Image (cartoon, rainbow, N blue to C red; front, side, top):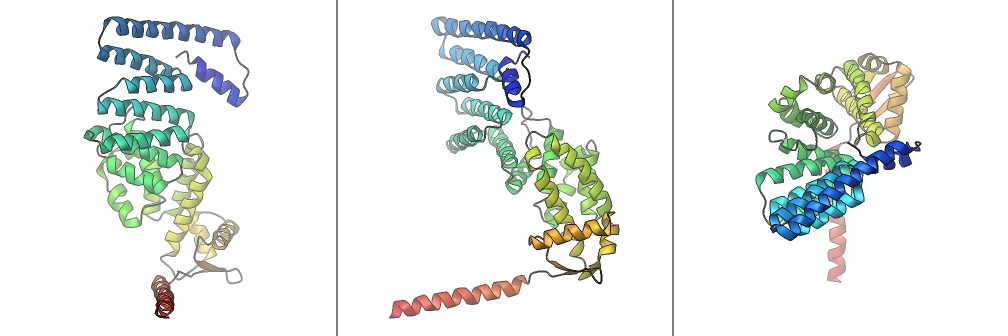
Length: 338
């Protein structure tokens, strides 16, 4: 696509040697096309109406977006935005700028324009663009490692997805499952994902994602670990989730360990190792690390080879908190009475 600006950016970022002849050829084609688009803007300005002027500016902005000219594209979209009266068309321009932010990983650019889009919707907006904004916000939440918000936004739109400019529907369903797994309770996971007809329909073409979801839900932990290893490789090359790969895999391992131990007061290390199809030494090291970090509530008896669950007493904790807050309130009342 003759993406000269993006080619320069990638070479600089990765330390690649620049192919001068290739770059010169792409730049020449870019300059010719930009000159043609600017001529169209000039002609529209001199001879046509406001609508045609806006369309000419938008065509230039879209082309600059296509070749990866970040700064020039952003400027061109701003100019087009100022020449746009329709709220819906302004939303579309903001969506384009947000996609530019995703392409370059510019979080500030994404966040600023998501806020502007929210402000526009507050003035009124059609259902389709309101729905699409949820997908954009969900993607940004994934970028920021907020899986809870991402799953909420994605699940709200899974049956009405129209944001094909961002990704195919199959990829969207994959991200929806990835976002939901670490944060949804088991009943919610069953209701919204496992039994979600739109999700299940797409999972036929996503065997690894389906295997990960169903092996965890069905408590087939050995299969779950194998699918998780494959998913880790998928995440390694994902433009949004790659930075969170280790965190995500760790959270799902903790989720699986907690899910298994919820069914027992105690379980042997050997039994857990067989369930996950790993060595006793591995499971011992894993549990020890997560227990010391406060992520698993259990005690490990290495002599007997037993793991004893030590679930926090929620009701007792609430009772103690109420007593403490009551004492604080009484002390304040006594001081006021004095």
